Image 1 (cartoon, rainbow, N blue to C red):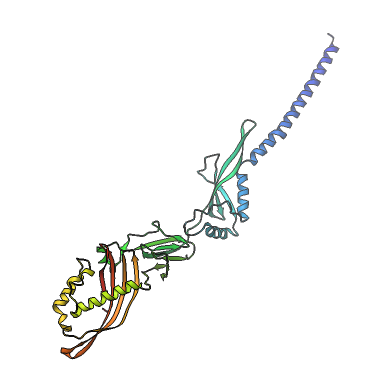
Image 2: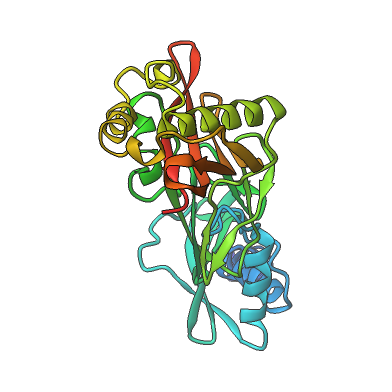
Length: 367
């Protein structure tokens, strides 16, 4: 082959080689500047920090709808109360974020939000989809899993003391064992009656962590609203008296007069024992009076009664009630040639014992 032919082949080879090199350079330039650069940009934009920028921008603009305030610090106030207070707390502050140092799950990163320098929320993200780029890069889409606001509890607190068969409500929500403090305490005035039947006791509730002063309502055993006594943050309710049913008024006045006749010697103690429990402490007291004090009213004329009334009826439960009775009893004492008037004002505690209503206890309101 001649030198001339060799030179011609050589030129063609180098021309083809140059074209091939240029094509390869162009191809890789296209890949690098087109595909790889594009994929790298997609990968960069898919990082959770970019998603967090959008989350923060919404919160900065006042949108805190992603935050859950349902689990507030008090079950007696709606989440809106805390949401409104929280929104005011963020007003005028710059919202920033930092990745939580303990965030190790690439599928569920955790970020902490700050309003200026104050820690105000924890954001939990979750990966909703993932795809591979260039076989080595994982591109994910993100969504908010939870945004947990950080806020202080309210500092309002109250105590409520009521009979254990009454119900109390704070902002319309009934108090229960979760708010109970200590053990139910017996009422001293029911000490005797409690020896025969179950009687109400006083229970104490405590509610704390409220954002504002609450509305408190108490209902008695029959479901009637009763007036609270308020002393600062302490609410209390005693037993509410009402009108006396006619049959109960008649019985109480009759019992009171009969007891008065025992004191005057006009009725035997044995005739009244059926109105008391068999082991009543009152029987020995009556007997002691008969033995030592009855002489004062011996030989009197027929007594007259005036100003008779029964009032302040209280139904404590289905087996227990009390009623107050008062009247004036006037007697002429011939041996002493004088007229005396005794004023009676007693409270009678009636209990349903062994199938009948008996006087379980009585209290002299005049002493």
